[in-house]
Image (cartoon, rainbow, N blue to C red; front, side):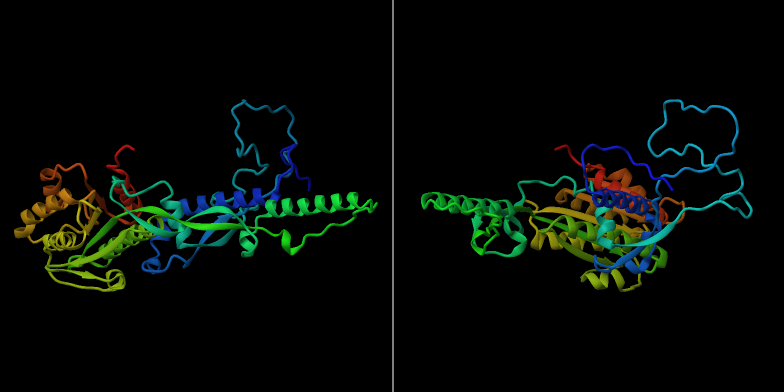
Length: 389
């Protein structure tokens, strides 16, 4: 089989090109299988190292195939692009999707393992917390805030300064040649190996890196009206949000608030796994968030983000109080997002009141009717009201 490749006068590493093509295939597969990945309920609450299997189409080398031996001349239109299929030699109905048994080769598909971290990095590659106030930051000593500060003779192998080491060897070699000339010794140098004294290592010093002071309030409705499907969507929403915050920001704190008729602060494990029941007072969740903000997170020094997920089934007597508390949250938050999980088509009373009575620009409302709308809802919420600059 003949293999043809694009001519490149510059020699390059074939492995690097293969790695790039494989990365593109993985990203394409994540994009196409995103809904199925997110529908895997077992990933919720798991560590970023948990592996997920995704199908990836194999790469094939270019090759000549037999045609139908028909007479005539074929020519292109000039609009062909790289990757276009120009005739495969397969007859109609021989391959996949013809409605019967075929005799044509199919695509090679294999499963590759990626971590939750890989999926999250791909999803949130171009996203960030909106409306961050750069003035609200703290100076902390970060492990990642390091810079090179010269060279030293001792160090660990990963910090070996190869170019500087070669320079030290050449300096020693030139000194040796001068010594031979001064003593009138005619000696040919065949090998001049490295010595321990030639080794130089990068000197690394820690620097002060400014990190944003930010807190994310995760408020979830855990009442009895939130059935298994709704609770799954809510937990999936917060799981993605939580992973995004942990991977993108070092100083950001996350507070978990669960509410039914009463609200309470819970830990990460209980938030993602514990089931509850009872009626619904949405205002209780907002009141608890405001109480925490008042006690620990001064809006003058902290970037505050609040996200609430509910099915909108609130006790009618609490609706007006919920609207008032929502406005108070908007007053102290950089962004307040309300996501309603409601598989039906009826607009809830509380959502209608929010859209009519809350005019704050930092308030975002979205609806998730099914798992397919999970990622777009979170993405649009994080991008919706982002300020310029």
